[in-house]
Image (cartoon, rainbow, N blue to C red; front, side):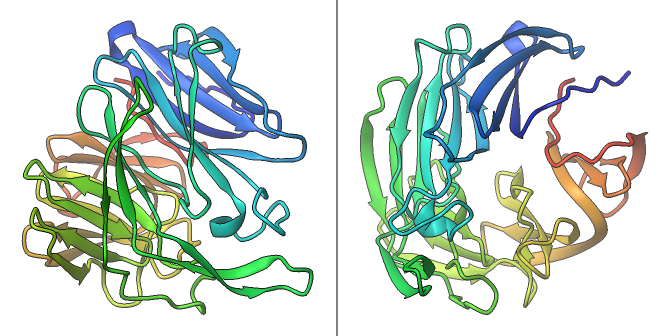
Length: 332
């Protein structure tokens, strides 16, 4: 059976398996709201998570939970707060991101907000230990061009910095500053420079970062850095779908020709071990969801769901949902 939950704005959803709950962060002009449902889609409770200053729209980009499912964390972005900016201005210089941590059982009184600098564009925290995340931000910003009214329209930033943040305390235990910029800073493709999309901390202490232009930069435990292009020439990671690990050494990257395309042309299976990649052609896929053990769910633009035991291009149709989702979450 299928259940439909009507949301009011930008949304992220997380499963809380220990309680049999679906946690939905729903953000719009009025701020963010935590809405809790059971796994059949029945509402249980909701709570406001705070309102932004008047006129600023809030986006929610990434959400997750600590390993004991005691804390919910998500990234929120407020538009138009940079100097000389208006709503809808250049995101890199105009949007203020923050990492918000809440107790889902007491969200209004147990919230922690960790403000992030301008230029930390849509960061994606990666949970490492019980309550520690790796959070990647771009380096110092430099404005390259402004409009006649002074609004910034083109900027670049320096190499990224990875911070290790304890969600329980808000403390930063250490920071790792990269030296390498991505291959490509092409303003004809985007007025934003390439920004970090995925951070992969390795057990050894090495760190890999995939950028929005398809560049993968690897920093070893001794501080040496190397870079590879993880996609076919002229392609970009799909904007609305987060790349994901198929196994510990393979990153699956849905891609398209333009960064703002909503449907993938294919998936690059990028080897973290040697920097090589192979490509599967999958036109019309709008969203990808890893199911674990090499299985993946693909949602096509016509609403059909296709499932595969491995990313080998052989998909079995398992559903036909006549909706138009941008976010897909596994419930069972």
